[in-house]
Length: 447
Image (cartoon, rainbow, N blue to C red; front, side, top):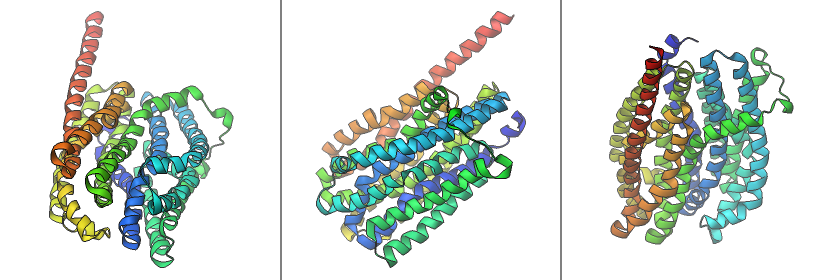
C-alpha cells in the first residue's frame, strides 16, 4: 500500500468501522430490548446494574486488539512486513491468555461485584443469572472483539463489518427464541450473546490464521512480552474509551437510585442503551481513522495525519447534529419501545434530549484521543481517557443533581464533555507547537 492510496481511503475505513463498532455495541442493546419486553422494569434494572462487568470484558479485548493493531500499522507504514506479522501473531496469543485470566478472575469476584454495583434481592438474582453466563463465555467475546481491529488493519474493513453483522443477526434470532419463545429470561439473553460471539470468534480465527491464504502456525514461544506491554500501553486509551462509560454508569446508577429510586435507574438504563449505541458510531469513526493515522505516522506524513483528524471532526459534527434531531423527534416513544412503564417513559422523554447534546461534544474528545494513541502519543490519550471517569464526570454527576435533582444527572453528560474538549484543545496545540519546533530545529541544523 502507498501513501497516495491510503490518503484516498478515508471513507473506505470510516464507514465499515462505524457499522462494525455499532453492530458490536448493539449486542447489549438487543439484550435490553428483549429483556425489557419480556421481563419489564426489573429486567432492565438488573442488566443495567451489571452492564459494567460485561463491558470490562469487551474493553480488555479492544485494548489488546487495538494496541496490537497500531503496532501492526506502524510497521506496515515503515514497510516492515516481518514486524507486521510478528505483531499480528503476538496480538492473537495475548487475546488467548487474557481470555483465560479474565474469565477466572471475574468468576471468583462476581458476587461481590454484583453487590457493589447496587443489585439486591430479586434484582441480584437476575443480574447473577446474566453475568455468570457472560463471564463463562467471555473468551469468545475477547477473541471476537479483539480480532476486529486486526482484520481492519489488514485492509479488510468490509469483512470485519460482515462478521459483526452476522453475530448481531444471530443474537437477535436467539434472543427472540430464548426470551420470547422459551422464556429463559436473563440466562437466555446471556446465552444468545455468547453463542453469537462464539460464531464471530471462530470465523475470525479461521479468516486470520487457518484459511489457505493466511495459514499460520502459532506457537506459545512466539509470545513477546515486551511487545504485549507496548500494545497494552497503546491500548490503555481504547480500553478507557470503552470502559469509561461503564464507570460513569456506576456513578449514574448510584445517583439515580438516590434521586429517582429504581424508577430513575430503569429510565437511565434505557437512556444508556440509546446513548451508548449511538456513541459506538463515533467510536467507529475513531477506529476507522486509526489505521490511516498510524500508517501516516510510520511514513512520517504529519500533515496527512492532521488532515485525517480534520475530516473525522467534520464528519462527526454533521452526524451528531442529525442524531440530535432524530432523538428529539422520537423522545416520547423510545422508552415504550424498550418495554418501559409509562412513568419510566416520562423520565426518559426529558432526560434523553438533554444527554443528546453530547452527540456533538463527545465525538471531538473521542477522535482527539484516538489521534494521540494512533500516533504513539499514549500519555496524552491516557490523560484524556482517564480524567473523564475518575475526575470530570464524577464531579459533574455528584454536584449538578444538588441543584437540578434527577435532571442534573442528565446535564452532567454534556457538561463533562465540554470540559474535556477544552483540555483536548490545550494538549493538541501544545503538542503541535512542540512538534513544529522539533521540525524547525532539525531543518536549521541541516542548513
